[in-house]
Image 1 (cartoon, rainbow, N blue to C red):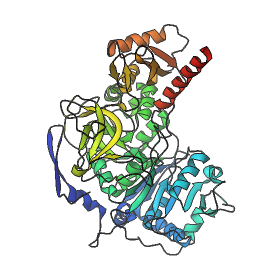
Image 2 (spheres, helix red, strand yellow; image 1 turned 135 degrees about the horizontal axis):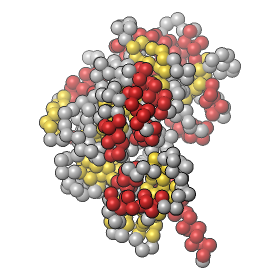
Image 3 (cartoon, rainbow, N blue to C red; image 1 turned 45 degrees about the horizontal axis):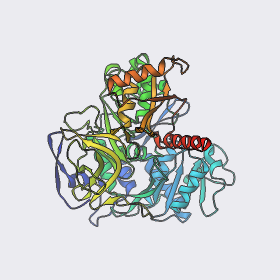
Image 4 (cartoon, helix red, strand yellow; image 1 turned 90 degrees about the horizontal axis):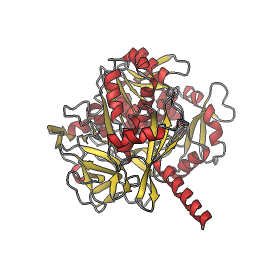
Length: 557
């Protein structure tokens, strides 16, 4: 962020003056320019003793409320215990924990020391965990008993703490450490450029890359909650995303707590019936999540949705493009506006159909630039392209005062071309200035001279009654360069053994799109490869097809 006082932007034809100074005020820095993430997200809200920070729905379905004051008390004492283990400013502390109060206490305790919190998704195996801990040079890891076996082989240089329901054995016990500290540790002063998170990219197209997130990014996270999610103090908010990933950590933890607004943790895995129970029983009015979760709600049918129809004021979607069929279904069966948002671990959410800003909503697009960001379509060489020309989604860092990403940690991976951060995603700008997602640069299909985005085909497939999920790739073909192949997960009541089903789906897509943009091959599968955060890994399907063709050619030679 620079010293620009105001950034006047256009969002969907609506003039919207974004005051950078006002956005930065949430960072609560003192006259020396110092602050602390735990102060921003907890301590300054704690004087209102009854102010609720967290509603936690446990494995037994019982909901408990945790106030900012209680979290401040417990996290200050855990910070003192971590300090006694030698954790100081800049050290990395990892959490391998479910969506439980202990996770928030650990995060806040880490930040209080000026240390850097490292999220670990609980579905990770030991290899993924070890890679991230070694790469980050992590000092301490906190795990629950269920995940303890995954870290049994770690070197002794990494301190291990366990959240136990009984005796911790040889491990340090989380709650005992808190109880044994008589005084809490004060918040360590931090600069706006000091890191408070270390994140790893989700690895949709290659190995996960590490990056630091500086304290100043909290201002951008809070602005997204206000402008895009439309979060207000009257809302009951629930973000489905797991805090082991960027969208959950940025926008289920940091963003709402920075605003002093209660967040929701549901410790049970996502389930359609349980999701509706949670929404109904907790009075949820504002929801965020991924298209994967929303497709499951759609597959659950309108009867289950009826109990909360009209209750949801705003629904936000991120992680991959939102299919238009989901938008129509939510409007008809939940009376809820669901808007598509785009972002990355590297930059946060930067392209949105905003709930909190009055502008036209372009169905099928990712929306308009988030205030404080300038999003453009570029060539690989960093030249801005005109409307209707496909290119790479890019951020102009000179004209994006809320942009905080500066590069990957210890890597020479190119992220910038001149003043532009190139996202690697292929998009195009529409006539109204909104930007539509086409696919990862590697995912775009070239068939018979046409460029086809997999998202368009997948969206058309989803509109067929038989299709629950789909992934579309380009399969190498000697005549057409590539042909479109679809991998489909069927809805209940449909069978892959139906001899007419594949041709019925092909005809439907051909009618909905065009004669060249339908899948010439269809494979019915039980599931699709995804990252743990729910993003499709089309490259795995594509690599598998290439390997099959290579094996066939070798056997015929």
